[in-house]
Figure: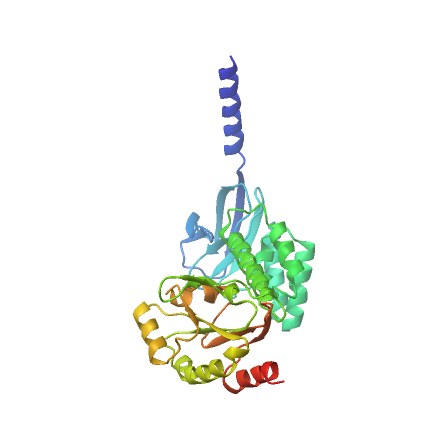
Length: 340
């Protein structure tokens, strides 16, 4: 008896789930001379043609679709004449498309679609700063509308973070929409980058690096604590890096006895080329490490290295005190530290 009850409940739940989609209707009319015979409705998320309709002799057409959640659609006559359509389940929309002026769509009965075109028109005739205010007002009044997603790129992820978070929260029910997912991923990447950037600010403890030296032995950056350490990102194939080598040799010779170390992180792929460059440039006296992953180097990613040569100078306590010093700039900084 219990098994039968469970099966019946499961069937009822399945029927309820299947019936959650409701019929949504587009009643349309083509204004002006029209030689086209049909109009299509494309789902912009799946890139699939959801429905199509023939166009009657009087220019009218009707499209019916069953949907359970709002989404982005494109109502298309041809490549140049189309309407972006964002329906609510169960709505009956009336759309008139003027062949001669396709941008002047007449739409009623579709709240989100009307909101999209109203916002779009306001933005077109506004300055950049005014556009941001239009989008902020849109989000404040309609945080649950997919329309916000279209215009959120007008905002700055740092300065307007509160609005970005408002959109992400408001659109949480669209968890399977790839555009919503894209915004969420973009936001997470931004936060990750921002947190990483904060970790690399002056006065912050230098993040750990733990990589192999040329013999395969793991050497941690923290093992040099108690010294001033120059973290030097370079590679054998980097000409500017190699041109900097004589300067580093002289600096190391001058200040090593006073508590100065160099921790060189190579962005090489070839272990052979890496070791040869160390020998050729006479760099053997200080620490060298690499995972031979080039721009995918774990050390490089930890320090957000975008170009080389790149350096980070840390004090005896392991805190960052300077970044991207080379040549005369590096000499001057070390003079301030050691030649007082």
